[in-house]
Length: 476
Image (tube, rainbow, N blue to C red; front, side, top):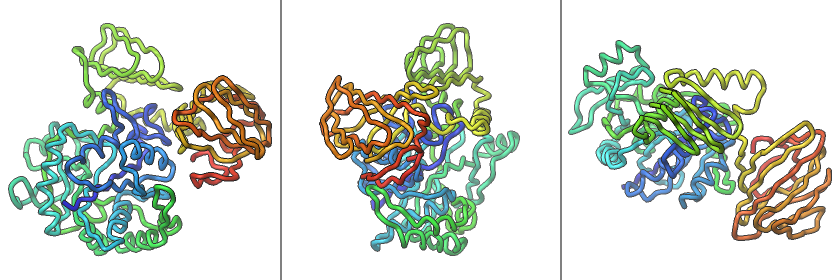
């Protein structure tokens, strides 16, 4: 089958703070009991369905995390389409459809979110197979999740006339209901949850978008016409895309088209929109506890307890969420976790950085962990991947001292190269032009001690960078 997966990997996932943050949102997290991130799990469930590499739509800030996770699965080949700004799902999918048809091809686009959990992969793939003939005939197919409860947090799809076995016309898309209405929907058996997953031919979607929202189509065409390749990324024209109106695929196309169809799906689906949902999809012990990391519980029931880097112990808790990360701890009743967004709003209002960044920050060359900081110093643990290199740079306000813990570093200091190996160190004065590279076959680990009057990430003057990053830039 000529299916091109299009994976939407934007979004901030603030309701899963402190696990999910603006610069490392939930689609890049590995859930308790899993070995892949949510993005990687989305890609993995396509195995056997299509051989095509997915087209991943990501925003600028997350591009290197997305690229690294695709690289780990051997699915990276210039297939990350960058949105310079968020404009909702209709423009994002339009960019994907236009990109997919640039060489004259016209594949079926299987549009998926990167942050959904699907337990029954076989059922998911079977539903896609059922949808293929409809998409080939010019239908825009959506997958409706057969509801298991009167859920008020989802939009619904009302089934219309049957098209064939297990397929229906879409009678209507319905907004999130109140509880009584949701109970009526559930009892009728005619309503499915709106999953936000679709299958349609690229040209069919573009034609319908052109009929109902020609302004969106025109803006996306202009933006993609000036697209440029950059490493593993496709960059569209920033100004043209900024001028594109924002709209969802539901409002822009699906609610207006006469060709919508729905395939009901029962596959253990969950959009993991809050910690209560994360508890539901996680493996549990005999007391209903979902535990991750170094955790000890006593007289504890139906809790989600996760530890990132320290021992977390609970006594006498029930129906509670406890999340420990390197720089934050969240404790909340499981039925109040929707209010986590209030914490995020408060952090923003106070000008704190914890809503944006984890203590461990990912870069294209590896990552660093801010271990300690004071008024005039900061200590980082840095890991540089084999073959990777930090930018050639200098600082106006800080000096640095690097101590190699493992591996070998090639350090360039004011134009002179030097190899620094395990248990050796080097001092980098204020204003010195320097670079750090890992020439070896194993990760390079080192401790960096910064000392100076200002230690912000924007005190980086990049003189040369293989990853195309500008200077100064605290976000990439």
